[in-house]
Length: 395
Image (cartoon, rainbow, N blue to C red; front, side):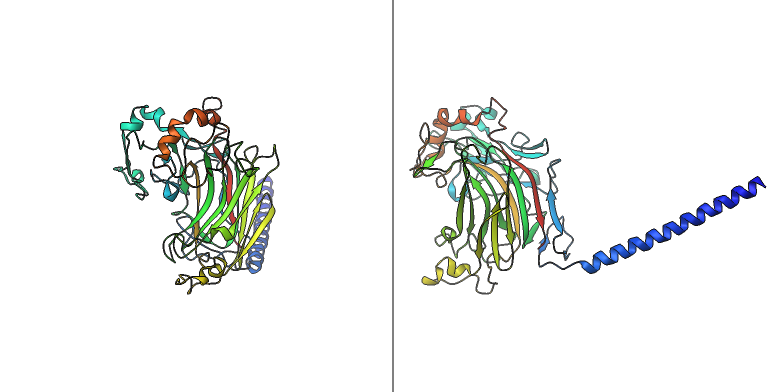
């Protein structure tokens, strides 16, 4: 009798369990069906190794996220180049855990000195060659003598090592809402940037296919131009566009934001964001919308007043900003365009923007700028660009 009662009890429990499970499945199916029916298809598109080909998104869906709990090399690839771009910046972008690493939940991009690795004599006599034997060691940009530099007394090799990472292989998107939370570096002549370039040059080479600068700043704490602190208190956001480099409409799509004293962007983390739609781009800092820039960039740039052919004539109203773009995060140094000669700075500026040996002049004047980087005091943390997260949502 006891055995029979046990069997009946077990059978009852099984029956109850099966009933509950069926009810749970029905409820789950109903919830999933409701969620699916409530999905509003977004105009956002995305591609890359992290995105299934042809995938569509629901409005408001989080489509990219990196909280930098670890360095995810499936998302970010390093650029390996000595090229300083058209600005002839002074850094060497390399894949090295002294210059780019994740620590305490934040990406760190930290500058170091080339001479610390190779010695002082190497600066004027050494050869930097980035012709790596392994694919990930290959030079990524050979423009502007980007793959090989030979030092001499007039033209030294790149004096600073840093990092520039991008998502071109893993994630590109068109239209959406994006946020990057970052703390900017302190140190004379440091140039942090968070920006986007097109996946494909659908309208031709730069700037015909566009560039979106979400954040650019200067690490100087006491750099003034016309009475305005243009260093750690100021950030800029810019769109570059034009039929060729001689015709770039960025002055019509550039804005700056200045923080109050003691609220510099190097003091704490700030959130840099934008909402990008088929009609316009709205940029923001810490939730405050700063500007909305509409389409028709041919007219905005004033290019219709010149005898030029419009490369965007077959695009949409937002061309060239109607294609997929990817993220770039980097810490540059110096160059011959971003730091005005007319600005005042304690100890002066070691080079002139028209100098034929600007990098050498910068290096020879390191007694002025190197102490401001505090590389010995805090291991370069204050001179580092720190990024807490990068997130993108579908429109």
